[in-house]
Image (cartoon, rainbow, N blue to C red; front, side, top):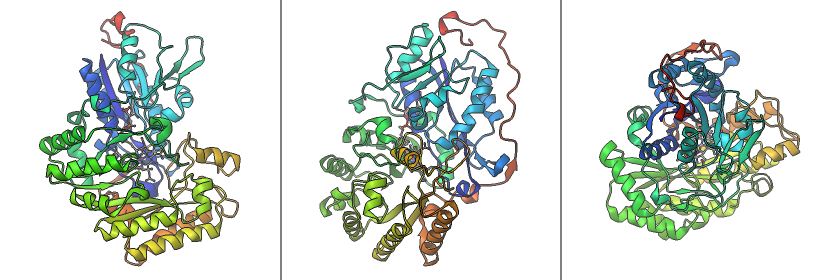
Length: 499
Ligand code: B12
């Protein structure tokens, strides 16, 4: 079959549009690789990366970043796919999927429309309420997707296939939960980097850098994160040999020099972490790396930090989240306390590795005193030498514990459905309303800035503002064209998809 995989644009508030970071669809690269191995013809359209400098001002002052929907539709028309698959890691990508799905069916009503990623996994039912959506693949999909496509091609049922959601013939929605997660990650092919717009991504980021993943799953259950629901609670790792092969491939074929380790499991098992970075150090590969996710302060002892530094580590992005123990344990379910984090940050800085810190303000029930605890803690870290700080407002993403807590405490603020960016206040607390929270967040960022600090959002997240060229106005959804039907005959074996 011909499968067109699309990373849609994202729609965010104006302020967030200056801070937004590029998101390379490595997941689509992996799926593409697996599908190619199964003899499907695959193409990726990364509307977010390809259209990064395009900023559209939509009704309601929303800003869309990415290719215009007509341009994506033109790709569909040209490739004539049997299947179109949308990747939706971020909820802010969802609004455009709604209209693109309509375009796809207007181009040919029998193109099969599917989706996957963090948002659909958390909200499969909502996805199937989009009339044009035919199938949702839950969680990791390297094993499930080829099977689902085979069944479609042969007009077979999906009812005994775990990890998919679809509309039943009788009209109901079937959700077949994920039954297991692949243990043997080394059996996966390398992502199809040749199908990803790497040149453009390097241009946006200004460096030959790439997000990189050493594991799947997370044993922690942080209230704001959906990784555990998406990839399971047991951490599965790629072997150091597999990872070195992938790193070499990226260096040799694409000239990558900087790696952003982005998975949650990298620091959860000290023995594994040490063995991987020891292997990296011994490989003598000349790379720089940073870890943006999942820093576990408990394992960062001096010996490990020494290995990290020698293997090329430049910066670790800690998530202290809050300075209040009550907020950490009762609202955010964070397993680390501020004292342990502080000690670990001190050791990291001593080892010569730079540190960034990310905080979350405005959790349900958070008081002004607790916010002060966070700001004071951040200040202490700043005096120790931390040079990048981000303050985000808490976002109750669908599928998270934080959302359940917000619903229980009745503190969700009215907000356009599923237009979530970590910029506007989406919840109030008993003491603080939206305006207070925004003022506090803005003041915190300004204060940390005005003392000569770089607010992390700028340097961590690449200097993307300068690329936000001209912002053009357009209406939210353009009207998909009248159905355009191919005059060629359909192959019955392909579930009546266009030939
Ligand atoms: C790494 C990461 C980042 C990196 C970017 C990585 C990149 N690829 O360039 C950085 C640090 C930049 C980042 C930033 C942000 N991130 Co982030 N990020 C992640 C993380 C940890 C992994 C994403 C990833 O690339 N995975 C690796 C690939 C291999 O896996 P995958 O994309 O999931 O793909 C697999 C499946 O999902 C599926 N699949 C994917 N697409 C499709 C499509 C089809 C058709 C099918 C069938 C299957 C399928 O198959 C793939 C292979 O198994 C996820 C959480 C997680 N564990 O997934 C959060 C996550 C996506 N991020 C999140 C958030 C909130 C953000 C930020 C808003 C945080 C912030 N406050 O700044 C920003 C937004 C950036 C922006 N553009 O504005 C949230 C999104 C929540 C939501 N519902 O919107 C997540 C889910 C974490 C969470 N809190 O739960 N992020």
